[in-house]
Length: 214
Image (cartoon, rainbow, N blue to C red; front, side, top):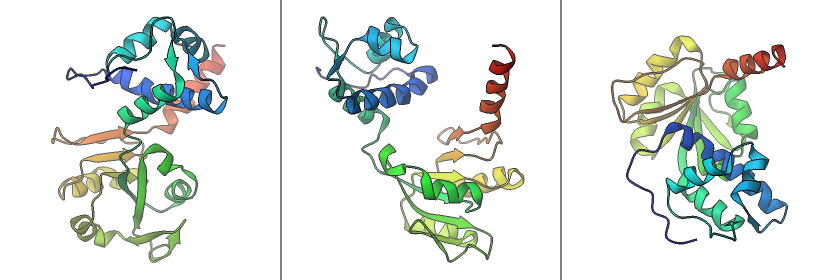
């Protein structure tokens, strides 16, 4: 594979958002027992041109060998390393309602390099309970928890009406990364704060467009 060192220039958001697709496709190839793959074959399976794949990978180093292609397991490991799946990022979830509960029950966090340690809520109905072995604490104690525990990411599954103020509250005590399911575009004046805003409606509307124009 050669030495692969993350280059210092800024990687475009478009490239970053393709990396999980590559990782998912390479995982599927591993499951299918495929040992090596060319950029053309990988592109055909993903609907991406071979030149785009080579250009994307060149942002992170030298991968593959001319005339051989890519060793699937090695490339998957490298892409996984770039994505941080081996980092075990610590996460808490704010909001243990239907969506938060579903994430705790069903999402494969560990397979993606994350560990969820706890959830927080304002409802007496869930405070003190456990969801898939994870404790649900009162939101009033979140600052104390953050002062005593390492938290890399906060997932927000709370109403829109309290989304920004909750984010601001957590930013004030040191949170710097949010996985945001509130359907509100959260903002911060702190340039070191990262928001990954998930909009289910956008995906559904995109599907609606494709149905209407197929």
